[in-house]
Length: 293
Length: 153
Ligand code: FES
Ligand code: FES
Image (cartoon, rainbow over all chains, first blue to last red):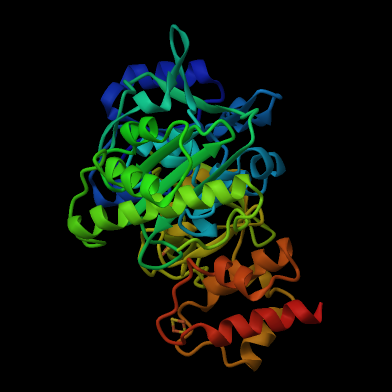
C-alpha cells in the first residue's frame, strides 16, 4: 500500500472541498471492502483517503411514506435488518442478502457498491428495476440522477471529483407487485455473480428486467420489457421475452463462466425470475430470500 | 504521516501511533501482539482475520487501523478472558477443527450470530459462516457445534 494522508471530515461540504482540492488523487472511503483491497494491490495510489464515516447525516435509513432513503453509510446488513426494507422493498432485501458474507456486509455499503461500479454489483439489478435515484452532493447543491444513467462502464460512473453520492432513494410502489433477484454463483459466501437477474411484475402487467455481471455495466432489458407490457406470462411469451432480454447483454468469458454459458443461462434465469416474481405477486411464490437456484 | 489513535481492545484502552496505510490486522498481530486473528487471504474473502468492531464481525485485513479510532475491538483473546466460552467448549467436544487456522474467525462469526440470534437453524448457521473458509474439516462438525450450543441456551 502506498503512503497516503487520511482525513475524516464531519460534514459534506468539508468532504467536498477536500475532494475538490485533491481531485483524482483523492479516494472516498466507506466500508473499505473494495477500496482497501485496491489500495493493497496498488491499483490505486491516492494522496489522500477521505473517510466519510465521520458524517452523521449519511447514516440515514428512512422511509418517509413515499421514498426509502438509503444514506451512503448504510451497510448491507443494516438494510437486511430493516423491517421496512424487507416489507416494502423486498427485491432489494433479497439482493442484499446475496452479497458476500456477513463480515463483509457489516461494513460494505450500498452506495459504495454502486460507486465501485463493478459489472457484477449485486445491488444494481434490484436498484435498476426499482428505478432508484442517486442523490449526489456537489459544491453547487444536490443533484438527482436516475440509476439507469449512473453507470458508465466497468468501475466507471458519471461521478466527477468533488461529487459525493449522499444517498440512494427508491419510491415505494403503490401497486400490487412481485419481484425477485436471482444470483447465480459457483458457491455461497464470497463469490461474485456469474449472472445476476432482477425482475418485477405488477398488477397492471408492467414488467422490468435488469442484469449484472453480463455486460460492462449493470443493464436494463428495455426491449423485453416493452414486449412484455400488458401480456400474460405464457410459456411462449416467456420464451420470447428471454430471447429479447439477452439481446441487452454482452457477457465476457472469465474465471467464473464462459460467455456462451452466461448467454444461455441468462435466458433461463430471466424466465425463472419472471415466474417467481409473478407467483410472489399472487401470493403463491417462494418467500423472499429463499433459494431460487 | 503518523497519527495517534485511541481505541478499546478487549476491554482495555489502547493508544498507538499508526500510518494511515497500516491495516488493522497487522497492527493487532505485529504491533500489539494479539495473534488470534489470522492472515489468510488478506482480501476479505476467507474470514480468518475476523474481529468484532462494536460487536459486529468485520475483516481486519481490509480495515485500516486508523478507522477504529474511538471504537471497540474484540478478538478471541477478549471473548475468552474469563475462560473458554460455551461455544468454544462445544467446538472442542465436536472436534470441530483440525489445523485450527480458521478457528478464531469462525468463533468470532459464530459468537456474533448467537448474540444476534440465539437459536439459529442449520440454514442460518450455514449462511452466517458462509464467508469463513475452512480448508480441513468439511464444516459439518463446526455447524453441529454451533447448533448444539444454540440448543442449550
Ligand atoms: S485474511 Fe481477512 S478475510 Fe482472509
Ligand atoms: S481447521 Fe484447518 S482451516 Fe479449518
